[in-house]
Image (cartoon, rainbow, N blue to C red; front, side):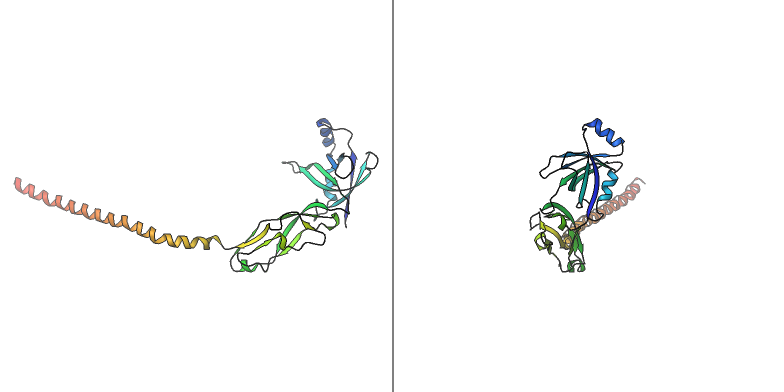
Length: 241
């Protein structure tokens, strides 16, 4: 198992002013908690933190954290990154949370799910919907997979794959309900909407025909009326003469 290495300093000062001075010096505040020890306020280099993480496992990387200036027993701690915050504009790391881990005890972690292969349902024109992209699991730190690859080749039309269908590694358990859907293949919406549209078409055509017929009748009546008026005019002129 690859174990990253990271150096940090124990923080004796806390508060906003202390944090400002810390960040002005190019470092960030951090905290280490969990296990049987007391929480450790730390200061560290944010770029060193990112470099210590495995590029594939990322925050699932187990780190050997060396703490300078801390209380007795805190000189070296085995940890994992629980979370870290970034500046919304600049994107640089502004704070980090570490949790102590025991390599012999299960921990909670999340791993990405990657679908492989082209399912039979998709070949028939279906659409693949991936519901779960990150799966929560529990296992010892050394067994956390970098990712879960799931072959969906045999997934047919209107079929789904659930958490309980996935074969996880030895000692790895899902931390969500086994009936949760990971992905499903459904028929295209266009096919579902075609039938209702076809049924509605004749009714719309009939409705459109009625006004047209009425319009022609009115135009005929107007023409006839116009003809009567024109015919009557010469008769009046003839009477005057």
